[in-house]
Image (cartoon, rainbow, N blue to C red; front, top):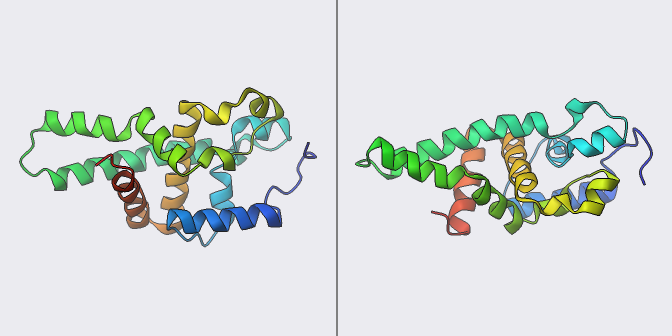
Length: 164
């Protein structure tokens, strides 16, 4: 078990996150931001860290970024579609199940830092946790690399795994 307030970004973790960046096709200038996308709130609580060190704020931001990227993509891709059709398509793109599947395809659950109880219970396999992690990742990409990079990542992920 880790000691309280121990630095989370060990050389081994840094190496794993660098490999993940290559897999994702995204290059972070601040790898600590990428790391934060994978810090579950249970971990911060168990290790005496500030709640703001968890991925929840990035998740909040990523949710909105995904919404606007999805809406923009559909608006551009279906110029003759009515609002209701676009709304239905957007719901499909940004729903929990879709985001969780994307997270599974990238094996994002394996990067999560969890409390001991979270590890034992296997919460890294739950759709809600995986979807939240994917949203946090998109939020981190947006903050570090900008909207265009976040958009490219999300749309390419949807295409690669046949969601669009």
